[in-house]
Image (cartoon, rainbow, N blue to C red; front, side, top):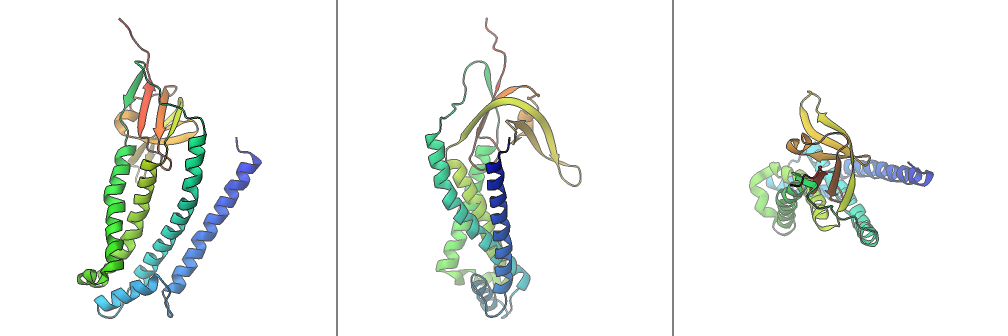
Length: 241
């Protein structure tokens, strides 16, 4: 149940998010026109120097806005992570249940986090390292270098989420399956399989999703940010001989 305090906090967070998005959008637009502002100024200079003296206005705007959103996200994450860590360590921890009545099902959370580090954080770190130390090494890309400027903040964001999921304490939730549903795209194609437990939706591999039914008692070990469990166990009737 949402309390008045919870509603006020949610409203304040939503308002802060909206102000941040609109503020960064306005700054990104302004930064792309003379006199140029950072980081757009550097993106424009590199494109002009490595190409034919011109730069892509729309691409530079998008790259600038993505970097501003990344910066805002990092600031919020930097303030939130210590709070989450202290709260998690000071609260009673629920262990993952074990025993013959608990069957382990496949999950994708750990794999997703590993992929986020491998294909997100590491390439982003390399890209920023090159841009900050040897930007001329990307001159062979010409104006196409703006692709790097746009991809780097996206990869960095995915990588930071993966890093937090792997390093911060994980949550354990034990409860009954409330619903099973498939998420589809605009064309009606299934893109995800979801199980509802404890009022939250959790993303599962299809082979695990098919082994569950409403009313099953499950234990979920979840990362701090995303909804793909790191571990999943379902309670089955134990048979002894």
